[in-house]
Amino acid sequence: MINWKVELSYIGKDFWGFQKQPGKRTVQGELEKVLKLLFDEDIKVIGAGRTDAGVHALGQVVNFKTKESKNFSCDKLYKVLNKLLPGDIKIKKVEIVDDNFHARYSAKRRWYIYVIYNNEEKNLFLRDYCWWINKPLDKDLLNLSAKLFKGIHDFRNFCVIENYDDTNVEIYESFWYFKEDLLIYFVSAPFFFEKNGKIYSR
Image (cartoon, rainbow, N blue to C red; front, side):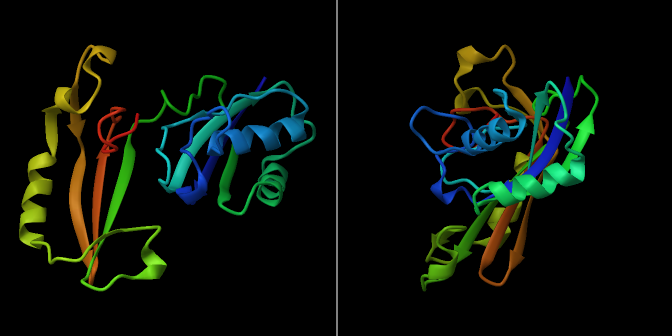
């Protein structure tokens, strides 16, 4: 078996999230459809995380295994995938990795980025990529809240508690970056919980 590691980005606007769902257009579904065409076998794509409907990705990592290479080098597979996949998915890198690599369980850190457009006037060109808030936000308060978020915290009130033995998570990084009307929040942790108001996705 060959274990392929792929880094990709996608615009999530027209997807029902990453994970495959019956009758829904998803990132995993689009990937598996093209891979079956290329390798002539059913392939399961494993993602490092599962994004919700409408969520974009800058560097999502996935892996999948094939019985043989079908004469695909990493460079050739990179080019063919970018040619066959729809325009809202972009392959950034393809590698062959150790058989033990698992996109979800091998990940050591995950980053989420939240973007706010803070202006009283609507910007149509940013509507699919930002949360528009038309009243001025207190940047000092935002910075203070981000600092409080960093460290180890119990997130039992933000997840389906019966799914986890331990609900404590260490938030490695938590900070804001401000550029004119764009307020961008960065947060990273070893993993994030699912089903908690779209704050996290594991």
